Length: 635
Image (cartoon, rainbow, N blue to C red; front, top):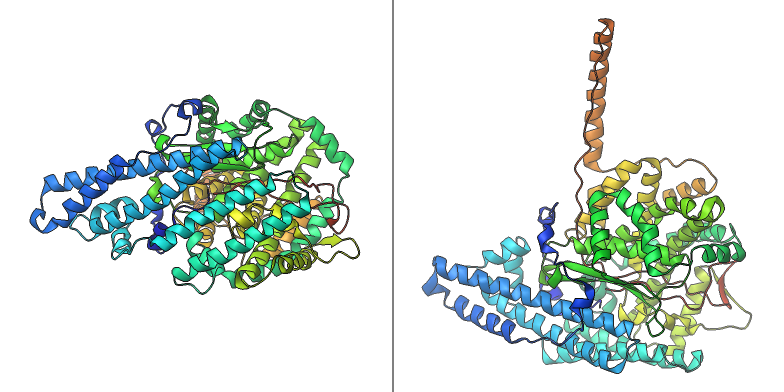
């Protein structure tokens, strides 16, 4: 689900998207009033209409010298362009519906075959679209692209070379290998055999992806993934520095959290929090409706049209995510529940992505992919929801819930860095064997606080993390976003109204700005600045000591200007008030809050993985260890 066609990403990776493209209001009519059941079954895709529109667009635009200035031709080009966008929305929706059925059915052969077929067709047709749009870009009607996709879209498509047969074959083989991994991990073979077979699949993926990077002009796949797959505005060196900061400052705090309560406390919470899917939604809905009116309306729309599958299913693959359904102007949440408190936090997390996706104002062809930003929206909402826990579970177990969520947020930071460091080494050294990877993972795990029984020299459990296979170099996004989510949560504890406004604005920027730029835009601290992680750790430690949170520094630039302006107004008002009081008069004054905006993006993933088996625990008692953790959400 992560891999949208890379040919398009390669062509448009450096295309700037103006922040002004984000709309504050999303027309209700754009959300089709269709229940999920009426979207099924996921079927194949008839590409006849799309190919016809692409062919006619190329034909019309290639005759541009004779048609220059023709309003009739321009209208026809616009109509063909709109039809292409609608067809690609439909194709993306069919692919995503097929993916949901594949996961709900446990990867059954029929669903697997349909998903592979649709995914391959999507790759080919995205490439075909780029070829046709390159002809449009070179015509007098190229401004149609700029008006819709942002200034520079036409220039980015000029000279597009297209996907080679070799590249197309590699993408299809990548999908096949990922499905082979799914089948291995769902099999009944002993863990040792599954790990060994998965390790061989991973080595094949490493070699295949190295070749993809080479064809794209990169020396290594890690750099390629950072720049092209995820369009990050930070690099491998920045991440390496973050790895060390996480070990130094966040690991001690997570170990402290692990000692706050016993496993018995957590089991008691799990009993109290055991709910079916509808009960989970009932528990969450008051918080969402109180957070923001429009978010509440989105939540009700989701429930009214059953755009979720969060009930237990024996055949479900152990995963959770949110996907877009662009043909319906909507989204869908899928989750295989744990049957404990995590079902609450997972669903809150996924709704953060659903809210973004639901408010997407762009067609799928032009949807940006700034996942680090989207993960702040989901993880920050998880943290804010902890304030409701005492109402749900009482004082004692509400505190247990909050501690468990905090522990998992820090796990996002630590495991995000651990798996990023592990995968970067794997892709930078493609000659490593599966045994080499097992030994490397054991060494790195110990640096991140895991401990092993005497005599253990390697750890193959990294194969349990599906992201290593499905979404390479993705995991660091959980670390970066978790740190920013903590920063936003501290603001929420200190100044909740300002934090809500920051959250809503950030969700509106997820399509338009990469991670660091978006954080700066809304006034969150740069987590790559050397002082930020230590400052976050200090604030969290003070909070755990029972001290009130004061989130100094940062703040949205506009908010600061507004506050400065309000201070001036306040002083002037006091002067006037004193003047009138002296004259035995009084006056009342009121004001309205700043307008909110809610926005967008295809945030398809989430629920963090905690790789902690009985023999591989972080130092100290760890009441949240489990062997059956599912992987985070995937795009």
